[in-house]
Image (tube, rainbow, N blue to C red):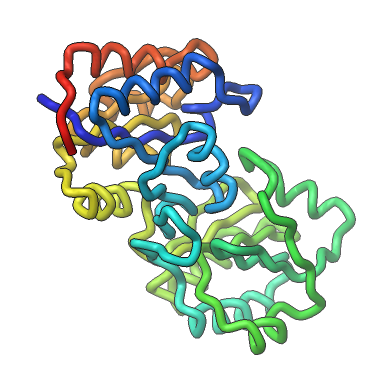
Length: 278
């Protein structure tokens, strides 16, 4: 099989545990490109943050960010979005403000949050995140009032609960907002996205946009949100540091992100592949 598209997760995949790109990884991406393979990133990061990694790797194709909600090679010209409509965002915020929680609304340019009412809440909000936001969070007294003057769709809403009412708030959102998907990150943090937002769905669109089929795609990742694209790509590759469920979905498990897993995989997969013009 000739693979023509290489889709790479960033955190835990391209980057080592020190959050850096090593020389071998950069050389491997360059090697794939020399073989005529198109390379893209598929990340949960914000667009600006993922774009920095793309620039370091000299990737000029559109990249998938915000867990599949936004794909583009320029922030003003997305080729694909699956964002929460502004009117739904506004209704969600008004509804959520009746609960004891902090709400952060994000899109490709910025993040806005109501001010925390607990001193340790900002630390709690960052638990489980792979990186700090590339842009600072703007804090406002009333998020619903802010949204009256800023009519932006959202890539996601992040909730940090003041108490463990995760199940109650999840059931309420499911009842009143069936177009919203609720993902529990831990006991206190929830992420809300437009139904259908996933790395896999965005990758399907991007592959078609570039003129490739999914069977010609190699997808590499390490986390649960990578599972579907790994399972359904032409060649799905999991990192050794991935959870068992992710590795079980993969056709191939490569070395860990601290042992040049991407570099090793790229050389093995594309070593015998002749250059193909695209």
